[in-house]
Length: 115
Image (cartoon, rainbow, N blue to C red; front, side):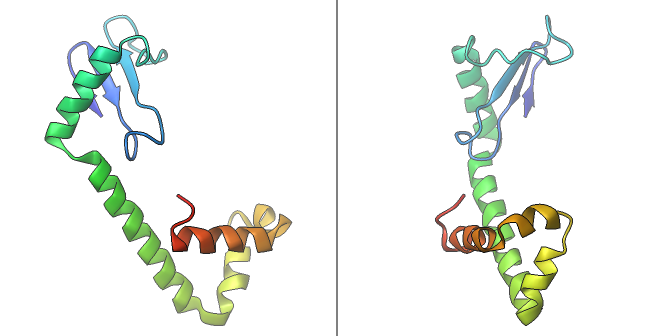
């Protein structure tokens, strides 16, 4: 996120998978109206400025890799108990609707096929 007197620019993750948002704070103090597509030049200028301060796509990649490695370590630490433990977490009702598909999605994420 980058804020100037007039603008608030919000970029997510890699900067592409989720569209950035731009708010004109002089006319929209509550930040209700994203005008990034109406002000592409301002959006691009603020994105460039933000990237000059912080390479947020690189940070996002690092965080995603860390999360994946930590999940793999957690999964291995559970051994044979993994399936029962993951099925009892707070999303257990959703998980139990199609555990095989959910396991497959996790395996594909670990192998890099799912972002």
